[in-house]
Amino acid sequence: MVVTVRTFAGFREELGFDRKSIYLPKPITVEGVWELISESDLPVNLLCAVNKEYALLDKMVADGDEIAFFPPVNGG
Amino acid sequence: MGAEVLIEIRQQRFDPWQELARYQNESGLLPGSYGACATFVGAMRDFNQGENVREMVLEHYAGMTEKLLIDHAEALALRHDLLELLILHRVGRILPNDSIVLVAAWSAHREAALDACRGMMEYLKSQATFWKKETLVDSADSVRQRWVDNVSG
Image 1 (cartoon, rainbow over the protein chains, first blue to last red):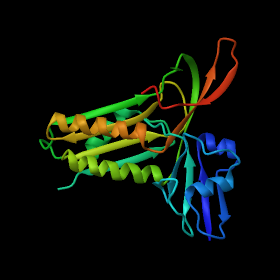
Image 2 (tube, rainbow over the protein chains, first blue to last red):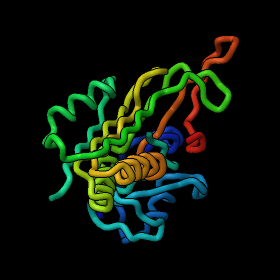
Image 3 (tube, each protein chain N blue to C red):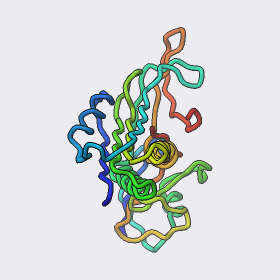
Image 4 (cartoon, chains in turn purple, blue):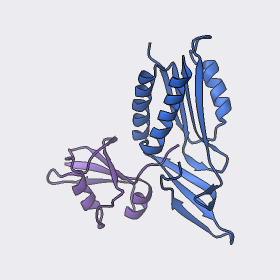
């Protein structure tokens, strides 16, 4: 299956991309996706979303999902 | 009857007072239907955490931000029995004194309008997918950038 990975703010700068499609030979969790795209340990301030909804790191991803990684938000 | 909710994320600068007047004039608010309008306007400072800020770039997760705001706005409108709720938020390159956000809530009574306005601001600060990157300048005119932590309120 194929998923799209999005990154924002400081994580986009660290990882060097803002959007990437990756092929997954078997189902994995959101945390597993992070391990595929990053060489660093899981950041303590990492937030994630699946299909534009906040998600936990142990959520399983599905074909066609958009998985986003970002730091704590700061609007207003 | 449900409240009208308008949410806009805008690249261009805006004058919150003009936007407020225009919205009120053009909305479906009937004369005499509301007893309170609570507003919040957030503007960019030229200082933050003890440093001088020259400008800021505000980015967001297009699609997710709007979804979060619409869901929360509808929940607030229902909870507080609002008549209208307006949210206008800047993104892109922002300079000191630019308005960043306008929230306005119309209701029959003040408590509902004030609570809804505060509720939306707290949500914008803690949940909505925006991030700010400041350009700082020191006394020697050297420039650096930093991502803003959500600590200054």
